[in-house]
Image (tube, rainbow, N blue to C red; front, top):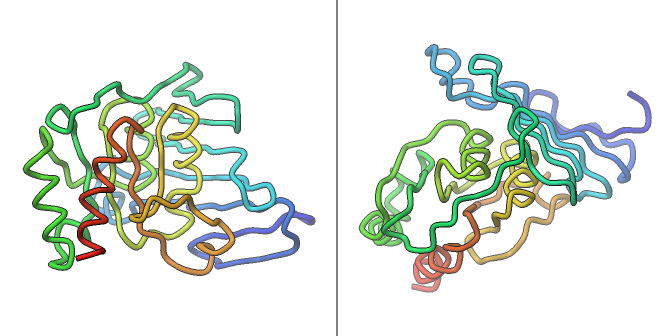
Length: 206
């Protein structure tokens, strides 16, 4: 596809220009797929000058097709979706990645958040969990060390549904920079984002 650049897990980067870049993960959650679980997704994003303008996340097994356009809203199977309205952590369902659950370096903020929320889940693929935030099924995802293809489509779907995604310091992604390195993300319905960051920042500052 001449004139486009590509970033993907399988083929790395093929940079032809900085105008239009496809970010593709054909199987986000491969370990779930191998075990016959439905917690995998196909994730495709289009970046214009390294900003997401199109996000598509699909799971063929349960016929769910999430889409978002910049300034155009988010949709599940063609119907508009929005994030949850929960503002108190005790009403919220959190999704934690395996690394956030297991690594001792995150013990303090993890214990604080677990004690504060309604329930937690180990989650599925990053793309799936972001879409679940966008449609209000869960309220937040915390996932250190993610690759750009894990969330480039999902972030637009979350943001167009009214949610928020930053790094642990509250900074928005620099997509060109994170195409070269990992990104530790916290995504939420937006209403509880500050409270989550306070726990994470106390960890980084302590």
